[in-house]
Length: 168
Image (cartoon, rainbow, N blue to C red; front, side, top):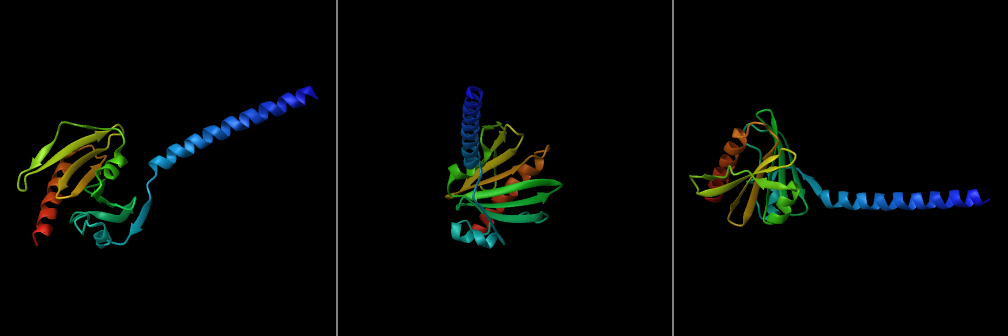
């Protein structure tokens, strides 16, 4: 009888520890997961005050559009055999929250035509992203592509497109 009682206590303690660990894991996941709503086109970003300047480039393929956390416009697309994510938001903290532990790579550059400073950052999982600001909107273009030439070129093209659309 005593053995049964001890076995029951051990099972209850182990079950309690497992439930506690599971609860901690669930809390961690909840902090990382974003609230995504898929939308049909860049026109869906207009209510965010961002407009249609968040779209894939001319030769981009497989575009999918999302609104994340109610204030981040996002488009995922393929370009030159690599996947890219282009995001924009007026809330820089929400925008940067997708990238966790990132560091500035020191490869910052200035898009000369519009005099916009572009930060070049990397994450611990080899994701590279550029960050810039036009007026009150922050933009990020990210990829895990090995060659970063397309990332910097696309960033410059996007900045020019933003200014072109703004001055229409």
